[in-house]
Amino acid sequence: MARIIVVTSGKGGVGKTTSSAAISTGLAQRGYKTAVVDFDVGLRNLDLIMGVERRVVYDFVNVINDEAKLGQALIRDKRVENLYVLPASQTRDKDALTQEGVGKVLGQFAEDGFDYVICDSPAGIERGAQLAMYFADEAIVVSNPEVSSVRDSDRMLGILSSKSRRAEQDDEPIREHLLITRYQPERVDLGEMLSVEDVLEILSVPLLGVIPESEAVLQASNAGVPVIMESGSDAGQAYDDAVARLLGEERELRFVDARKKGFFSRLLGK
Amino acid sequence: MNDTPAFELKGRLLTLTVLRLFEPHVVNLAMALKAKVEQAPGFFDNTPVVLDLEPLQDGHKVIDFPALVSLLGNHGLLVSGVLGGNEKQRRAAADAGLGLFSDRQRGAEPPQPAPEPAPAAEPEPRPEPEPEPEPPARPATCSARLVTQPVRSGQQIYARGGDLVVLAPVSAGAEIIADGHIHVYAPLRGRAIAGAAGDVDARIFCQSLEAELVSINGVYQIKEDLEQGVPGTPVQIHRQNDNLIIRPL
Ligand SMILES: Nc1ncnc2c1ncn2[C@@H]1O[C@H](COP(=O)(O)OP(=O)(O)O)[C@@H](O)[C@H]1O
Ligand SMILES: [Mg+2]
Image (cartoon, rainbow over all chains, first blue to last red; front, side, top):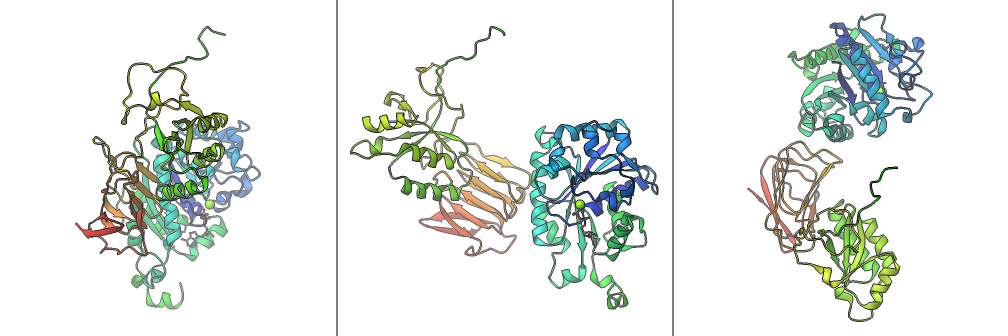
């Protein structure tokens, strides 16, 4: 059975696509057959972050409409074995996704022997986002350490617990994880940002990881490389920890403490 | 085509909410309703009601039924007919497309579904047993509603006719409502409305009072006025006349 994991947040621009790319890559690096699916129909950018934009032929909507087989639309990653990308359509709107269609394609992944399907959710709490999470077994709720983002994540958690297939069928609830991204310990110390503890206190969801604000993310996405592959970078290592925790390993939290940063690197503004 | 009949006409006794009208002026009524609904949004949700005109039947009060029906409809109350009223008022109601209940159908106060069929002619609204929001005392037997998951921003939970017990945090932006008491064994950060159907003795209990609003039968305090206790200190809130009294537990 393919395990379906939605990466969601409510708010836009918090790091869902960055996280979907990193986590799917991390799972594939560990040998799991993994697909990452772009649900942001009309605003696709997962293919850019994954560096496969030039190889897009068919997309998610084509598969839903039976215009292409899943195998034809999936783009196989050239760097990491077992990693596949299903791009979103750029020309269609969100109404092109139907619950039936999404269910059909996700079922196909299971038949094709995938271990994990990572669903990169669009922003908002409407149809597109709800379809991305409807079939999920697990949810990674991405939140920035600021009040409005946390509030949106809280809303999304409410929707996960009431409008998903598992909720409707009274199954075991979706397993929830919290991923805090763009964390800046210095600004937390200045009281300009919520701390990890603050966010956990409000959301009370198990913590999957804390990703620091990092130059490496921008550089990696410009290069079309999932940041987890930059294994020397802080954000890359933090994502690697998150993937390990997702698989049940225990890893200590890193990059959450301003004092641990070297004095010189702070002077240099890194 | 098969032989199954297209419909079946059956008499049934249903529990209906009765709205006793003391005030024929739609504007005054609108203001009273707005106040009620602001305390408890979602309190009425396509609730069928019967208008009891009895308090207005002496005298010459004219009732604008079309305006009344649309006003109540906007607040989630679907008028299915009228009870009582004088000849003129009943004719106006019929002209507005409302059903006419006879005084014989007035029924006992807490109506019990009876096995005997009733006369078949009455309009049959959705069979939804509704406790009457009118009587101030809580019904003697009402079970509490238990919530074990966090109540998240944007969610609303209403324990109709009884108490609400929440074992997980209530987020800012969430709303919990009960006709009876509210217990939150976790931080209360959203809005809590107890005694929503008129019980002035309803209370709110919580493990940590960080609420946006607390209200007991219409008397409310918002976050700014609320003397926030020490977070993590359990409190209880009850109503004394027109004040809310907040005490550590
Ligand atoms: N940890 C991070 N450090 C710095 N920039 C980040 C980080 N995570 C995301 N970003 C940047 O934030 C922007 C939005 O990220 P994206 O993953 O596209 O968010 P979403 O999919 O939630 O809209 C992008 O420009 C991305 O490079
Ligand atoms: Mg995105």
